[in-house]
Amino acid sequence: MDDRYTDQALWELMRNDETAAFEEIYNRYSKRMFTYAANVLHKQDVCEDIIQDVFVDFWSKRKTAQITNIKPYLFQSVKFQLLKHMRSQRISDEDLTRLNIIDVSLDVSQHLELAELEALIRDRVNKLSPKCQQVFVMSRYDFKSNKEIALELGVTEQAVKNQISKALKFIRQELYPQEIILLLFFLLIF
Image (cartoon, rainbow, N blue to C red; front, side):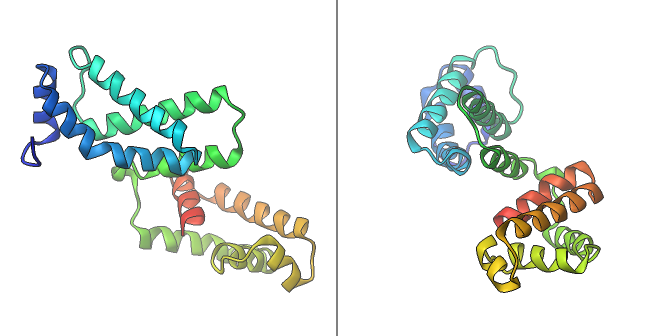
């Protein structure tokens, strides 16, 4: 098989037990799916198992599943498996946040352009109190640690954390729900 086949054509071949079509789909998406999972869990062995489980399930459902778009189906399957794994483990808020942030990249149709997002965030940041704005900018735009900010401003790390939490809460309240996920993506990735 090669890149000349669309995902949908490969799916139809796979439904007719064509293993080469399955292998092509695996080759197209497994590395990206692993990267997605690894960005959430940071546990290589667990992520490898999750990707393997998704593809085993994908193959076993080839006769019965009604899949119109393979890539979103596979990535949603990975997300489901990640959530399933996290439920069985003690998960941190950081893991859950990473899952939500990375999920944003799967649904391109709901993305705002980066320039629009930056303008939207800057507008909200400009509405913060001066002290809160200063701490937030140092944290998210200047990439300083809470400790560095605390030392520079002569305040405690807890005060820095409180200001960042206050800023994030204010920004979240000002944004629409779909923009909140984009905000988290922007603030943690950039």
